[in-house]
Image 1 (cartoon, helix red, strand yellow):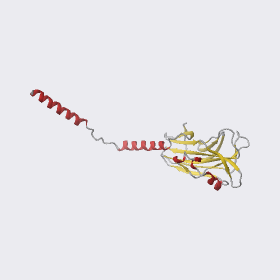
Image 2 (spheres, helix red, strand yellow):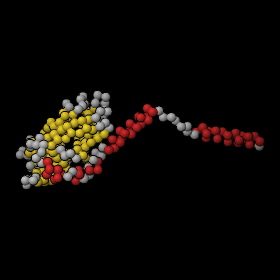
Image 3 (cartoon, one colour):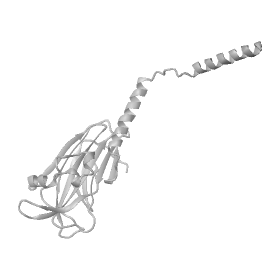
Image 4 (spheres, helix red, strand yellow):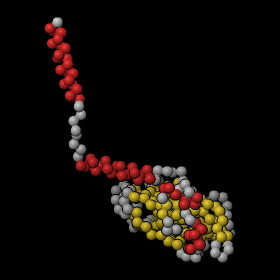
Length: 226
């Protein structure tokens, strides 16, 4: 009986010792690891902000010499309705947006502009169009709204006869979106697709098969990835 009591006491002591041994000891996390974790969180937050892809038609990824990316996303059209200018002439409009996400360590600066004159669209004879860049900023909550939240009529009434341009800086780990409006004298044959891209440090805007050189960027040696 005595042996059984002693054995029970020894087992109890052993269990207590094991329990104490399993208690987690606070681990000191290095400052480098904390910085790395914070950087991962910051990058994931950027990706969450631009993760809704349902309105994205084209996506272009460019990388700098050390492998960081610049991402350009272009939307599908909204609109396809009529706009009547101050002189009573009717046009068919469509609203698009472009969003640029800067994952690099350097600010991305660009300036783009379109002529106040009309362009032609070779695949749709007798179709002439003008391009406008409103100064409004696209935000995620506007993507579900009519005309992507752009007050189109007010903007065109105020800017119809003006040359349109845009100049912006996108800081590292940030994104920014803007609008482009197409205004046609007649409806286009088939679908209408547009998009901004980069070629040899120049900004190129595409309307179906037609491309227009429309601006410059501050960065060199960007390599197209996809």
